[in-house]
Length: 168
Image 1: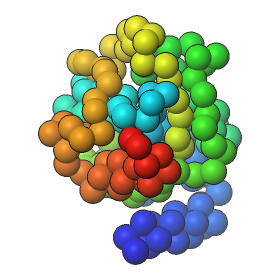
Image 2: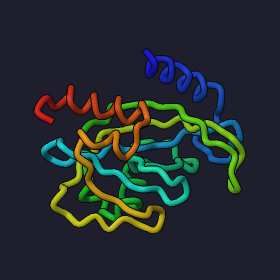
Image 3: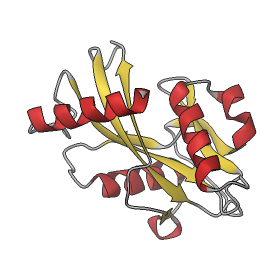
Image 4: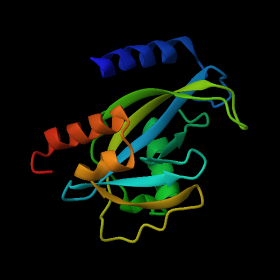
């Protein structure tokens, strides 16, 4: 129910705002995130975001790029430090949509992120070097996600993972 309302709001926002992928749109903009799972589907890749001081999934601004798949893979590569060639897009279908408020801070006024999320896979045997945008990055067992971040959208993506991959 909740996600259905966010899908409708996101569609409306995109239809009403030609520049919806541009960060300069003051009311909000489309962002792209990934829900990265390991091959056994037991863990998700999380990072402790330096600027927001929260554990989150990889993602970021589209910065005018309307190819949201490209945005998600690029952001995942940048934030994880993993080569694009080692990131597998499991489906071109949207995995999740979330709208969340970014409150005014020293960088930006209050605005909305219309976050479009895709399901990706990275081999958890690879080293994950991360980058300077996060304090820490690593694999978190699906059962432990709420201990890192209790946002409803993370519960929703964890639930969807278990539905798609029942042994997860």
